[in-house]
Image 1 (cartoon, rainbow, N blue to C red):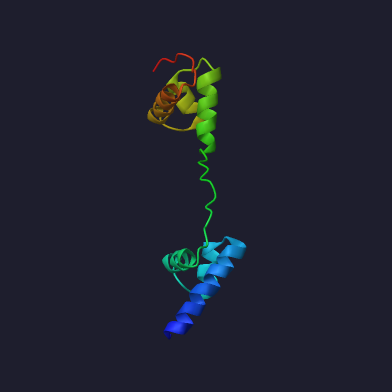
Image 2: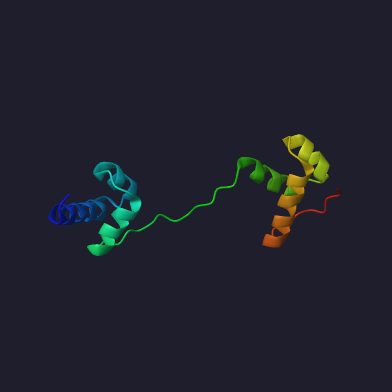
Length: 108
């Protein structure tokens, strides 16, 4: 690939990303790496907006928190009901306390 072809390719990539904001699609379409796409965008003044990172807890974590907050069951009983280890329940309880979530007192 000549220098002019490479320059045109980088410009086309930057324009594509400017229109779509989709780096991965640009990688597939132009058969280049994400680094090449990002460099092309930076070279042509295209800013890439990244979607916010949303951290989703596993559904059982929500169930654990709900039981820790609402029930009078022991940690072992919660673990047995949800088919998980008491250590997992204990870890979630400690994280709840650290995050300021009020949980009921539970006996080990």
